[in-house]
Amino acid sequence: MKRLFVREHLRKSGIVIVFLMTSFSFLFSQANGNLAPTFYLTELNGDDFFASRVYGEKATDPSVVVLSFFATWCIPCRAEAPQLELLSQEFPDVEFYLVSVKDPTDKILSWLNKFDIELPVLVDKYGRTAEKFEVIGNDTNNRAGKTLPTLFVINKSGRIVYEHSGYEKGDELELKKMLETLN
Image 1: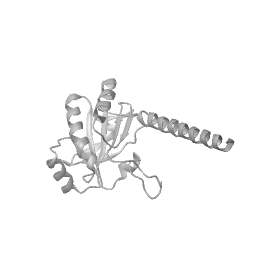
Image 2: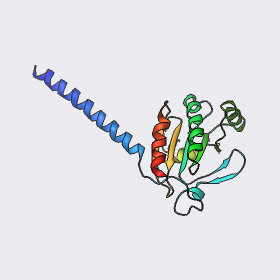
Image 3: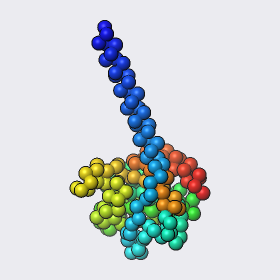
Image 4: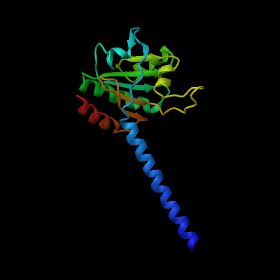
């Protein structure tokens, strides 16, 4: 009888601990306040993109930035991108960018046309920017990475104020609330 009580107590305690750890992890990932990495990528249209231009201490044109890392094979990315397109129209002072991770240009163009997306796309041909944001791991850091799409909101001072991996219908409402607090 005593063993059964101890086992049940440990099982319940374990559930509470897992719940608390999950909750803490969720809250931390939502607004961790870490400085966003700076990076350089080429836009799909061939223009140069320097993150330091739009966020951080030395930004010449500071703005709130939404970065969504995606891949053309990613099913949830197909659902998220049109929602970001709509939010970009609702928040014209926020800069929205899709960051293509390791996709060839022809596939990106085909994907954009197929889903009627007009957001600017940054091409992360080798995945190095995705590695900086820990969206994907690499052989040297042995981190598993996150689920695509992975979205970051970066404030004008360059701090990550919101992070979300994956996409489910309704996630755009949470993002909208976050953007309303920053404008």
